Length: 86
Image (cartoon, rainbow, N blue to C red; front, side):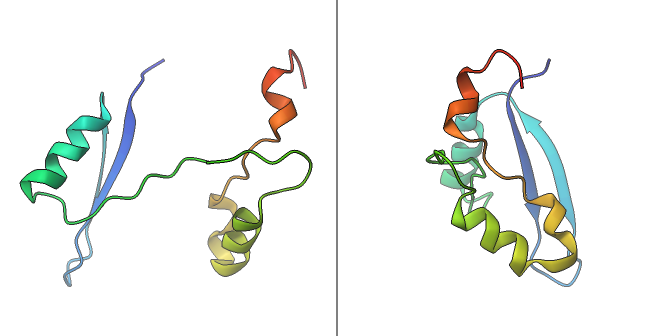
């Protein structure tokens, strides 16, 4: 299984183009920020796993983006991380 980070870059001009690539290490992205090649970066990773209910931010994001709501994946419940089977 490949490891690394998926990076999506997009232009904010009229072309509205996007590029998807995989990088081995996150410091490759940080170097692009430092050099000015990228203007900003966001990291999509769940921080703080819920004990019993979906995270409020996941629920809100799904409701806000409407037709694309299936692209927001809820973070797993904390107790599932140690489970041998589902």
